Length: 287
Ligand code: CP
Ligand code: NVA
Image (cartoon, rainbow, N blue to C red; front, side, top):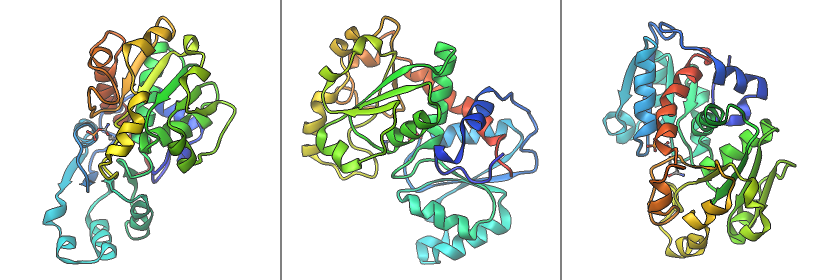
């Protein structure tokens, strides 16, 4: 059991595997009041948590940022101290990862990171579940194409922990150099697809070129254009290769319409599994 969940690295391999295989216990959140605080847009994360919490017998409090006194200059500290008086836990999406760390100083109950500028651990955990469900194994070779963002970072953390999984990140040199993430034997980085033996790839993943936290940049999009996932790329991968995307997608940019709507694309199962995984995760939190 854990208290806060900010990054995949808050878990070890044993804990991850325990969460993935856990069964639903229907009343596990009975009498628990859990707040959803989202500073940024969300469809899947907000809804899957809301339904997941209700399904486990908990009470969901949808906190509207604009309605809080923090919008009238009550301090961040006092806002989280006040929430601590009433809530048993928080699901918090923020544009600044440091705010999660700061919030935990004043809010003494569990906080789950529902996406920050640098980390999206619930997505990565759920994607591990989807991969295991599909291949009946986590021994897969994943190719991540495009931007190196919060989702990619959590996937790298997951691959570092699940060492039977191989991950190759294919991204422009400027982005790889800027991020400078820790290399591991099973996590590799390249800016050139021709360096990769695509016939061994079982799963191609991508995400938007411009994340919510990024400034719109035509320059970044044009650098990333040659890293989009299309049918030509997919045709060179292994026979049963799947395509995954955390969504929302910009079809025609990071992925072609043909790939997005193909039989290889499991994006809707992936989205559905967000709810399956949220329930497993919620049961692993020490409320
Ligand atoms: N994948 C994901 O987190 O989607 P939302 O932004 O819609 O929650
Ligand atoms: N990288 C994306 C993920 C959205 C779920 C973003 O931060 O906007």
